[in-house]
Length: 401
Image 1 (tube, rainbow, N blue to C red):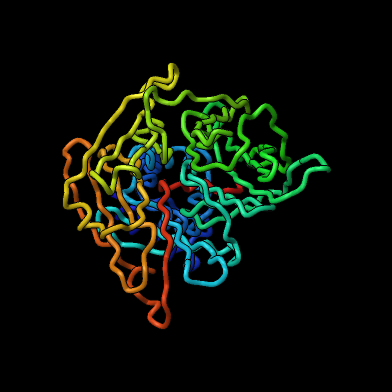
Image 2: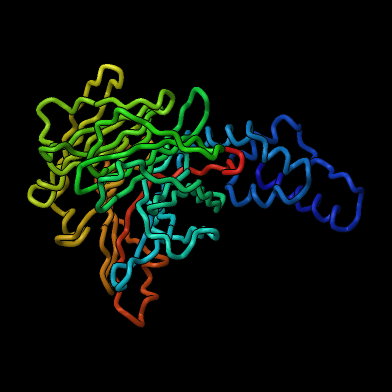
């Protein structure tokens, strides 16, 4: 059916170019089923369809269509991650490049962001609904890799007391309020020498930052995840103990999230597992006994955690390569897969990802190929740092957020 729509569109476009009636003719399909067909098409195709006629542009640009498209994307997630890659072999920090990594085939394809300055090297946070937030000190950007859009937020700075000075680190994350359907960016500045922090929030579509008080965050972020209408931040306290702080996007209030009872929260990562917040503990035992322990927030309201333990088959070390630094990614789909992806890819080395299924306990090895993994840096040594992010297609323009 989608092919039929595209074929009829080509005919319609030819009629317009050849001067046939000035008003576009809709394809000979029931009008009410056309949006149901279009939501199943790739964003790249839909962006091309917008150029066909004013009626098609109006329909595809309508916020209700963007809502339907996003709902379909969330219900049928792609088996892919957005991967940020920078070259560690350069003397100066390398700007990020983005690629779409297919988990099943291992194919890496570039995701160009034309309006992204080449010097941007800031921190990237886990996104929401396909939008990615990138903080680069004074400036914060929100990107939609699906539409190749980049929005620069108004400059903002911390309101630290004048008598305090020193090195400042900043972090930013994007959250979503499902009630108001508004996206908000939370930005934190840490005055490292004094353990003092400042926090501000901005609603996308506006130009003003608002100060947020009463936050327990005093130290740099380790991870952040947006879910359940909140931004969840993994950080630590004065005793170097991990803590999870949640920022409710609607009320713009902070609260503490109680960690799992009896959990050994050493080196942990914050993840989403089947739409539930999860704490992943693996680095201490992964290379020793192949064990990954995951605590899943089964009941968000009562903060009930469920413990899952996974022991990888002995062959996983041979599949991924000995001693490699790994990034763990959990795809949005409901397959129960956990991905182990090399964080550092050295010169002339092959790159593989390992997929482990929680239910079947089966493991699959997939070679990563395509740019920049096909060794086109033959004229010099290179070391790539690779970090995966959850990937969701979203056709909503940042101009309409």
